[in-house]
Length: 333
Image (cartoon, rainbow, N blue to C red):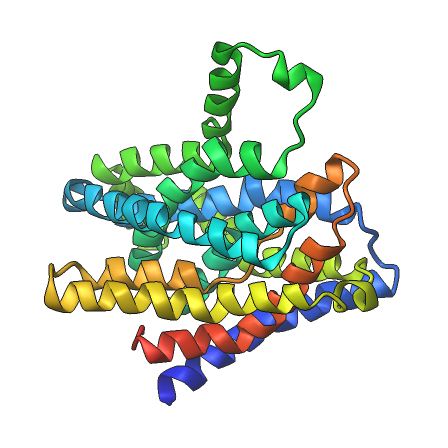
């Protein structure tokens, strides 16, 4: 119970940031275009800074030699989840577009913005590093299949592209600030340069490390405020009228974490043992709510995003309670 209350308290802190975003948007302090700016700050400054600082401080030869385990574990488990997500989405809706949104939401939780925020708030930096490595295969599958296969609309130009052009387009997704920050941080950490940088200035590090640290600390609150601003411009009456939204939310927040987490627990106990950190990363990524990509990307193609918005609103609200509950059930601390 102590674990539940502790994590619930922290989730309420993150939830309050969402409320702040919602209120300032409703009061007209910011408009819906503000999320574009905040998203750019998150993806290009704050999240890369958190990743960079974490790997500078924690990544070493031992961590490098163990990296293949979370990568393989993540890939195998996600490939097992995707077919179930596809089947569940087919049962939830007959509409092709909505079905694709449900498939994406069930295949990939909001392990990015929300997951990073939760892990950074609840766990030490060493665990955050393991979580970042664990999610790399998930990002890869999103770039290769999730976004282009489910969220983006196919137009005549994209259909006419050569295979080489499509491959190059996919590769460009990996040349982003987050992956670059991870690489630079890993190099600094494994060469020992990070220890030298942190040992200076009486253990506080040189000014560069302090700037990186403070920028990284902005990631969680800004991500949640951005989420609140997004929700402020949703037609709540319209999005809450679709019963399938609640079904998919229940699958995402409760059924999938309990089912797949339970299977992993049994495999770990009776078949082959694996690191507890891997299991914790797996369950936490599963417990996250439905992501915001299902709103942002289809909206760029002029699609009605009422249902994806409802998925995001309902699941993020309920996740304040369900995430601590799932963590308590699996004794994640």
